[in-house]
Image (tube, rainbow, N blue to C red):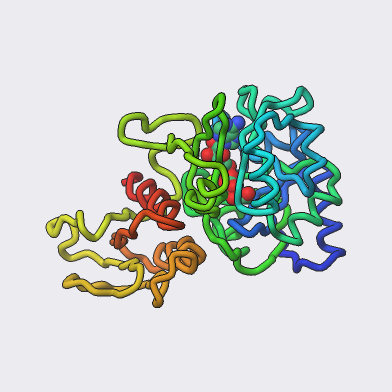
Length: 322
Ligand code: TXA
Ligand code: MG
């Protein structure tokens, strides 16, 4: 059984000791719970891949507690990235940068770049500081399944596989970080996430959207199915009535549960139609529906602006498992 630790300073110290000794601890961030290991210890990092059943070609993010820690692991050559760090760190924004030698190959899946971010969560920042090295952390879920936004979600998927989880309550952003990479002068969006694309473009100008899609579904780390519940998920406007006859159906709506279909369970992401609130509720509500012994989840589409871009990205991938 994994330990569920309240987030007091003694427990954060105990968690840091586990990580320093090469073990794994799940911890809260503002986006989703991370599964942390000492990011400069390749054997510890290997345990992450084992605990999650994650393919080793999928690289990890290194989490730092301050900007000066970046010097050990990377260099920032791009002036736009300095602006981004100043404005959005700590926060749900990850940068893919050139890696220094000290970063183990297992972290970067053999690539010469490393993904880094500074999370906006006091427990995460204290933990990283006490560990003394950057913490490598993917989302603390079994590979391909729903991301955890509460400690119970971590227990549900990883019990028996890791030492402990620091229980920091509900994650306030609820979707993973936005990931950016520079290519010459161009900035590319690798994953939509907790910082809105519009806010980034306001600061640094046009960003090239280069995640997914139909044409190229297998670009690194962007597997076509991901973030999925253990039951099929379909979009409301694409439902095949034959497919749903006689089934127990859950509905995931944005604002209003308006539909001619009959649902056995319904969740509404934001009664007021607020996309920030919808993102914060997304994985929790999908976990709730997954726990309800349903045959199918039907989700309403959300307009793809602001956090709607990240929400639709997660839902699309969830719909591709079955
Ligand atoms: O909000 C988040 O980013 C959370 C919390 C825990 O910080 N972490 C997270 O990690 O979502 P993970 O491993 O679930 O997703 C990291 C993504 C993957 O899609 C991976 O392929 C991509 O980042 N990535 C990591 N390193 C990369 C690199 N060097 N180049 C391109 N993509 C990279
Ligand atoms: Mg993940």
